[in-house]
Amino acid sequence: MKQFGYLNDPLCWISLGAYAFNRLLLKPHLHMVHGHLLRTFLHSHFDDLLLIPAALPVMLWIQRIIGLRQDDLPPRWSEMFLHLAAWAVMCKFTGPLWLHIGTPDLWDLPVFAMGGIIACLWWNRAAGKSARLYHEF
Image (tube, rainbow, N blue to C red; front, side, top):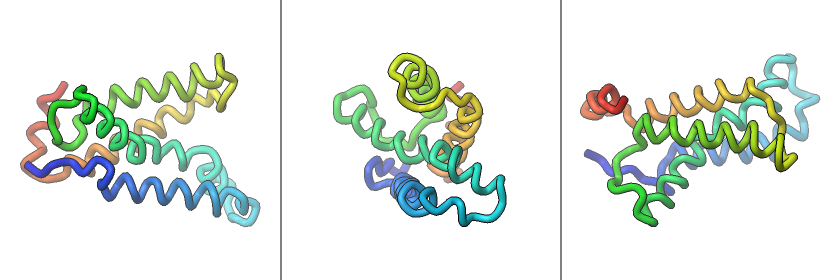
């Protein structure tokens, strides 16, 4: 089975690039984007969609370095859901309510999950890995 690339994962780099593009180039010019739904998505949810594809490889690499992760397999569904829950608590509850950083927008949670599901499907897309997907829960 192919090893996971961690910091060399293409989806991670694409997500980081899309985040930077949205944050630095699109958001400052959103008033020129036509369509209210597109403007709202790019301003409020696009970055949230990229959270897990961009951050999970980095977190799993750190866990591998310090010995909390024992193999170099692609991210498991259980790992993705654990990190999804932790980041949801940090980004939507702890940060906004106690640290006064960010916005407690609960609509972001399904977007976090959608990004994580798409990323996990991508990372585990090979036919040989499909059996592992169903045995993790």
